[in-house]
Image (cartoon, rainbow, N blue to C red):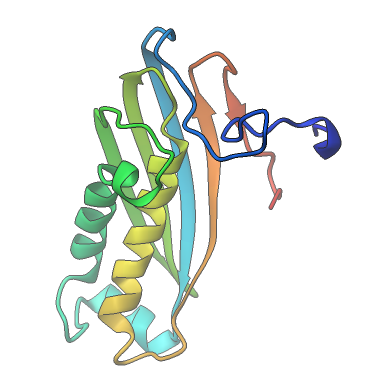
Length: 165
């Protein structure tokens, strides 16, 4: 792990002011990032998700579309994010005994990575699930959102070590 005292944050200029990183001179390359999130639900909601009987409708379909749409909106949400082409986005949802596991992968051929797009897709998909079940399960919680892997670009490939937070 990098020593935090030796880390220079790329979104700060020499005076410490927020700035957008200039990627003009970088060549577009294929880049991929994956992220995950988890929505913890009560057992009754898990059963309704498995049976397709949630009162508001097809929760997983809505969450998938919300995640894909969110990946394309990152520059509107994060003021220092670059406008890039989101060329591929998958949002996979799995109902587990404790809730819903969300796994996303976003791909581009651009000058900067898609980690924030993957993370935004995962969290917004989770928020869509929360929105659709909160009327029945007030304890529903979005948690464990994290980037799990990235590839491409100058920094190369990275995979979150198993068990790392």
